[in-house]
Structures are given as structure tokens and as C-alpha cells.
Image 1 (cartoon, one colour):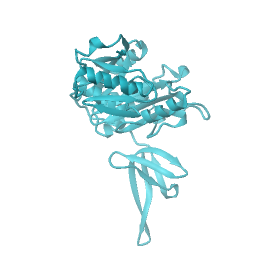
Image 2 (cartoon, rainbow, N blue to C red):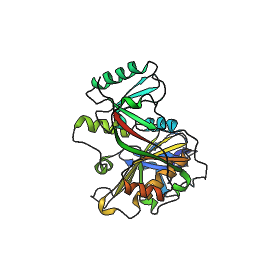
Image 3 (cartoon, one colour):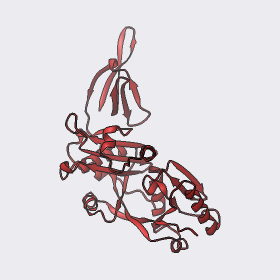
Image 4 (cartoon, rainbow, N blue to C red):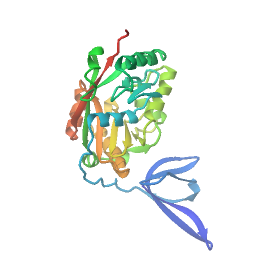
Length: 311
């Protein structure tokens, strides 16, 4: 939106300044607007002069950014970081109190900097010290062939899908219903379906959800006093925008809310310079797969998790 505020007085005459961006908060501390470039602008409510909703940023058409499966998977890792992370050569050990396999597995890409038996021993010891199973993220193509035979059966086969961002930003209707924020409030968290009752895991979930280079949370509010109708999350990292946590209330499905949430997040990502979209969807989730097919997403690569057995 566009917001006009009183900036200062010059020769007893008021000077006004405009800022165009996302209104991320309006509370007792004042208003905060995130412009298309630069840091957030915060000012007291008493300085507010006027405001109006402006159309979504017209995302420019651009080719899908070039990225190998390994490069894209590393980007995905930055957008869903573990609460604890430690490098083992080019591998990344991740832990987050058991919240999601992605944040509690080793991303075994590249050279671990030590012979494979020693690297695997270090992985086992690191996860054992945290009371977690030693899970390995196995990427196809990407994971070394000599590692695969040492692992257990595949778990949670997942597709990584990509699409040009500009087309996604032009989909959906009712964009004005979507609210964007830098943090996931209690209303957003109430609809997110992967939280446990364990306090440590819930705190880890908050830290993982807010981790990443540039994170945005989208909410479609429900009726007054009611939970939100839909939510979504987007992490912007250079030319790529990752979409996830797209949830819609069961009674509000098939009304295009998921598409609208993604469109608004895509428009925001385009404002920050992204041109490619990607997401991760479990291979068996036919409903989500059909939605993403319709939005133009195609499969870049696949991955799964596998347990590293104890010696």
C-alpha cells in the first residue's frame, strides 16, 4: 500500500513523505511499512496522514534461473535451517528437536573433507549426542553413488518443483484479502499443521519457520474472532523464492485461496528481485500435486530421507 506521513516542519510548514510497500504491523508501537527496497519504515500513528491500497507489483517475465539440483537443494537448506547446524566439509549437519526431517538430517552434498567411513562415524555421533536418528537427505541426482548402498530404505519421497515467478504472481483473485507479515503470529500458527505439543519442538518450529534470508508469512483472515482461512510462507534467496506451509481450512477449500496466497507471496518475491519459484511436495500428495501442475510447476529433481544404520 501507499502511506503518507508527516515527516517534519520547515518554516512552520508541514513536509509529507510517502512510502510504498507492505504494511506489516499497526499497533501501539505505530506503523511499520516494508518498502520495495531498503529497510522497514516505522513511525507513530499520530503522524499518519493517509493511506491507500495499490495494485500488486507487476512481476516482469523472466526465464527460470539456472540451477543444478545440488544448487537448488542448498538454497532450500538455507530457507529451512536447523536450529543447530554444523559443517562437515561440504556436508551440513542439521538438528531442530525433531521438528521435520528436513531440519533434522544431514545434507550430504559434495566432499565431507574426510574419508567416507570417518564422515559417517561423525554423523552418527553428532545425532546420537542429540538423541536423534541419523537421517541422510538423498538427492536424485546429486547424492554420491558410494553413499547410497550404505543407507536404509527410502522415506518420504519428495518432488522439488520449479516455475517462473512472474506467471505465478498473476494468478488468483481477491489479492487484497491477504495480509503479509515478517513474523508468524498466533493466528498463523493455529492453522499450521506440523506443530507438536512438546514445548521444545514448538520453539524449534518457530525458529525454523523464521529462519532464512528473507521470510514472509501470508494470512487470509477469517471472520472476526475466527481463525484464518488460509496461510502460506515464502523465503526469498537471490533469484529464488521458496513456497511452503500452504494451508487452507477444510471448509474453505476449492475456492482458490491457496492460489491467491501464493500469488501475493510471489508478487512480494518479485519486488525483491526473484524470478524463479520452487516448492517441495511429497510424491504421494496427489491433491497438492494437481494444484501445482495447474500453476505451471514442473519437477526439477527428487529427494528422500534414509536412515544411516548403526555400525
